[in-house]
Image (tube, rainbow, N blue to C red):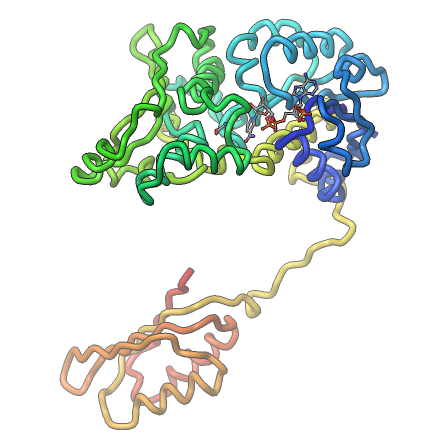
Length: 419
Ligand code: NAP
Ligand code: HSE
């Protein structure tokens, strides 16, 4: 059994506890180990009175507890978690953290202290998107030419609402805080510092560069007004807060600022709390990563993935993901039983009564027509274009076969599934 101590059981910490409990069967099958949260640290134990885990106000008692195998740091801040994680590593405990502020300042010292002890931080950048895994492992054959994108869910959520609903800055910030997206001190978000912390972590992995937040260009979204938004809309732009890392000869450019982005660009379409990061490698070309950048569950998904990885005790994940089959099992759904909406194109003879005959066949197979257009295209000849409500694959296949036998249907019906 792997025992976890969680330092900070707030938005993310609580979701970690819940995922490990509620997804226990699949997590055990993937890791090959039972993983249990045995202890948690908070300041106010009343907030977590509903949880059955032993709680303490003293996080040091957890990092010094010989029974704990993995320390999961989800409390935020810099100095205190730095000291706690240094002690955890000195005690040979594996570490998982989502704390980008800590890593923005101390990532190289922590790497030095960790040595061979696992230290993982997937959730520190772009919430649930496995960008660190992709950059560190998936793209390791490449020189990274650039990486750029939306790295702060709170700002993207706020800018989206300000653009689409004309919402006021303070109102949308309060909503982002209520939804658990914002940092304890939201000036980290709106000032661009949180995005900068993430950019520095990615830049280390991409370029091996040790820079501090104070050394790079950081501007936030505080100055954006509805006047700027009106201009952007009029000229076909949207406004985004971007983090950009770019190689330029033997230099690396690092910057965070708002930008007018043409509405047709992919990045302009990333709305709400979603994050999206484009990475260009010299060999692979452009790759894109998209997903929820903040929030308890999305972030905890990445934290738990790191825990599972560590629980495998250095062993690679099994070739096809599972150490042992799931008890409840899963079987393949027969292709006949797949349900979809369909578009059908029929080429028909345009004569009285034909439409009635065709629609009767749809009814015979229990397939409901959603919309229909007839387009004449030659003498007594027409295309009949039909979309259906959800129907079973087997029923559509049988209907198409029967339609094909009709003298009035001039060629095999053609179908496209509507998704
Ligand atoms: P949160 O909701 O404020 O939770 C913080 C937790 O840490 C609370 O349980 C708090 O206890 C506890 N804590 C703080 N200081 C403590 C201390 N001195 N001793 C003991 N417990 C202490 O924060 P969060 O949103 O979960 O974020 C946690 C970390 O994840 C941060 O580093 C954040 O940057 C990072 N992160 C968050 C998100 C997100 O979407 N929220 C996404 C990615 C990364 P009390 O409640 O009793 O004060
Ligand atoms: N406050 C951060 C954001 C949390 O809004 O993106 C995720 O790192």
